[in-house]
Amino acid sequence: MSQRIPVVEKILSANDQLAEDIRKRLDAAGVFSYNLMASPGAGKTSLIERTIAGLAGRNRLAVIDGDVATSIDADRARAAGALAVQINTGGECHLDAFMMKSALETLNLDLVDLLIVENVGNLICPASFKLGTHRSVLIASVPEGDDKPYKYPGMYRGVDALVINKTDLLPHVDFDMAYFRRGVEILNPELVTFPLSCRTGEGLEAWLEWVAAGPDGGQARDDRE
Image (cartoon, rainbow, N blue to C red; front, side, top):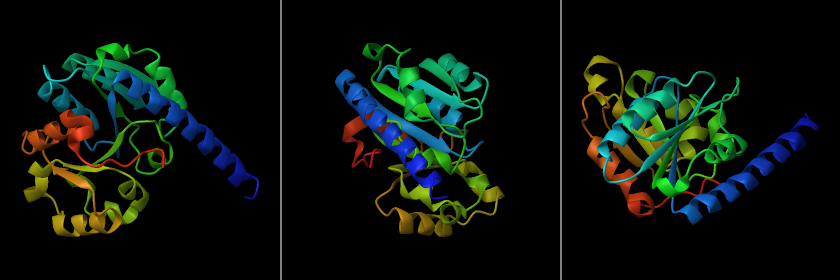
């Protein structure tokens, strides 16, 4: 264990340094960026599709999609009208700054106002690897259950905004919203929260306005900290 800890710290330090360089590159290009994280099936890609459609004509969007395999998510983002790049991690459970750098090299940032990164579906590893994005967003979905803030505190503690997706299912599943929100507030009392349904569109407008506002959307936590 004594040998493992320094190795892990060295990996994270190198990742964080590259993330800082990525942030500077995005700032120089005038691109504001979001790192979307969630468990599999929470609705990351559906939210991205809705965001692309909702901001069409207002902001030029690009999407970096991370997944273990396939280009399904990038294909969906591209079909929705955004520039899109797929990263296949080859089994890794998260994106890191090195993967992010490679993806950025394939994008013409002069054509982009907002960049959305869809991280690999996982509620543990993505929280540890910074990408250089300006804001981190966690998507939780009603069918996952109301205990997730209590079981995965690191993820909830380290994000700037929380999307509670699939609210249209609240009448049909056992989900205590008050209990869920109480767990979130204990970990992250200043968190911006967006209850919404990608299926019905309810609540989406507030999310779209926040994303479109970029740096003016509210206080953001530096994801390099």
